[in-house]
Length: 225
Image (cartoon, rainbow, N blue to C red; front, top):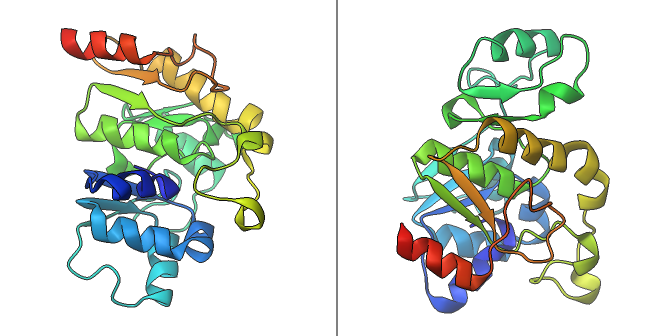
């Protein structure tokens, strides 16, 4: 589960296997939700900036918790500094775990990709569900079901109301980063052994990129698995 979606499980008393957050602004704007996730989730996948921001507010927040520190692909684990475009392109083109439209000279193609191994980092796609798909692949799952991935900023976030709502950047990132990453995944990662489905009927993601299922189709698919 990702970001504010944790409140859905909290209401039902369900502990998610993994909770992901890579947005340090979420820590600043919604600290109570993140602390709720920390207490409820079996495992946490948090970016270094999220960990730093959380511990600055609540120093003992992660004590005794199972925390996986995950970083973007162009930041090696040794010092965390971003690689140059040439360094990253040279590394990515030789690595079978990374699918990427790499470029020697331009930054943007190096941001469009998919990581099969999160020990080597993840591609952010500017939306956390995409990191969740990469985590599912890394953990060995063969089917992923996206819930609530509408990618429509006009609908708002279900856990925010009125003046408390934080402005979304989805519209600005969708065409340049989000959709291209999902298209790359559909063309170069999806296969009979790893499939991704979208349970949001109103999602901006085209069905030919991520197939959409209604609940009856989901039941039938799970029954046949």
